[in-house]
Image: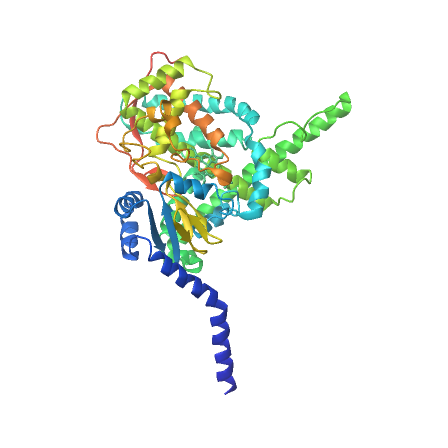
Length: 496
Ligand code: HEM
């Protein structure tokens, strides 16, 4: 009898414990019936095919600008119209990322990308000065130095024969972020292969599959699987490399501080280390830890370095490579950028208006981050909808950028949309760097890197298309071309 009573009590307790979740799930179910969207079966079939972006495009055409998808027990509502995107991105209550970002936490922890609420706010305030305009000025030289190495490495392909330029660009972008924000010379371009880049590719591929798989979302099952084993091995490579970078820079800073202290004593004069001088990203984190100005632990610093190493090279390499692919297919646009690059050489930090338009048009067609999502923590009004607490909302940038009301004939590559007609665009029609409080902290850095690399590459080479090759965009964490970015190159006679 006692056992039965205990059992009944336990069942009731469990039921009461989970009652709010059950009620919320039922509310989400009721709400989801008011929106169009595919069945779970259709989701599974398309994940198997691996054509998520084409499928999302099809869903937009079939269901209109707002639709929903159930990912297991998670309901996600997708938005594609500038007015809705404006409401979402300007909303200060939408500061938490949705549950699917938890999948990258074993790698990036609670770095700036995945963090939320007050903790995110504190970190964002701490890190923002690391990308100040004045700091970017100091980054131009190391970036250009790495561009020169890239130009030299490409010489072996300057015979007009097709090759995949993507691996060259990735190594360049990795060296650029290490040498600027991290203050470390990595020389990835000097190696034929980078274990770090391979590990990033592995982890992105696995995370992409995991995010669309039902059983792989259970950590215990996933860790026992082959995919889990491969991911953990890649994680080890990535974390070891991050700690290596942090320790190397810490040693350099300690040495510099000791030397400066000695110099100060000799000369009895002030200096500005840790004071008004602007510090680059990693120095800022390390000095604030070393001088007790923050409560950052080594793990906190590792998470931010992982986040910035990843976001800081994967996004820009994708954008540079897709831009080269588009320029190779549009000779007249390439000629205009080339002429501007010759005329305005050295102005990459200020203005190169036509190249900027080409970059935006590239990011319109191939946004490095094709969608991003937020958790709905309180019932949320968007347009005529009230989205219940517990759902997630997603800005489907890939389709926002293909909205024919903003961009007529959306698949056509036409930089004049931004060069001549940008003023007429809705302010949220283009959102490749997101917008509002959680916008991309590295967007000025990214534009500088894109302008420096593309203008220098164009001054040295002419890019030609490879017949029959069309990049196949895949929506991994960052958009990639599944079949590489194949082009032919020929040296320019103007190259010095
Ligand atoms: C073409 C290049 C880039 C594009 C298109 C891009 C795009 C974006 C987008 C759309 C977001 C919002 C993501 C979300 O809400 O989930 C974002 C966030 C972020 N990006 Fe970028 N990004 C680029 C380059 C960079 C670079 C070079 C860095 C670092 C140097 C960087 C660092 C970050 C970080 C740390 C966040 C999280 C910011 C926060 O939540 O406070 N990005 N980026």
